[in-house]
Amino acid sequence: PTPRSFYDEVGGHDTFVRLTRTFYVEVAKDEILRPLYPEADLGPAERRMRMFLEQYWGGPRTYSDERGHPRLRMRHMPFTIGPIERDAWLRCMHIAIASIDADTLDDAHRRALVDYMEMAAQSMMNSAV
Ligand code: HEM
Image (cartoon, rainbow, N blue to C red; front, side):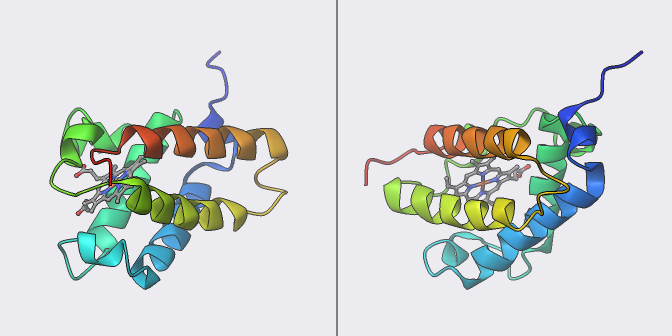
């Protein structure tokens, strides 16, 4: 039998939809982050982020079917990501994670998500300022 993935344990697709929806609502209001996004419509960026996270946490592999290997550091090179951008990104992500209720996301799963996001945001930095 296939072990239950983290993706399944935290409520699958619905949870990742809610997480990335809230994250991009915050990005849209953020004066540091919003100007970095080239497109007027944040919908496609939200969808790519959702597919990536679903795949990373053991859900459907739609991201790589459509986009190939993630290569996230390389895909972020066009944007200057220093400590200010990292912190703005994490602020939005912390709000998004906090918005998932405790019945869906218990403390251990919440901690795992937060730890991953902090590590990932740190590793995406490509500028000292
Ligand atoms: C794409 C900003 C960190 C995952 C993008 C884009 C921007 C951006 C401007 C292009 C929007 C688009 O797709 O049209 C930032 C900033 C970060 C950050 C300022 C600060 C730390 C992260 C982290 C992750 C992530 C930590 C993953 C955990 C993605 C994904 C895409 C993306 C999956 C779409 C890649 C693709 O084209 O397939 N990001 N990002 N980003 N970002 Fe970030």
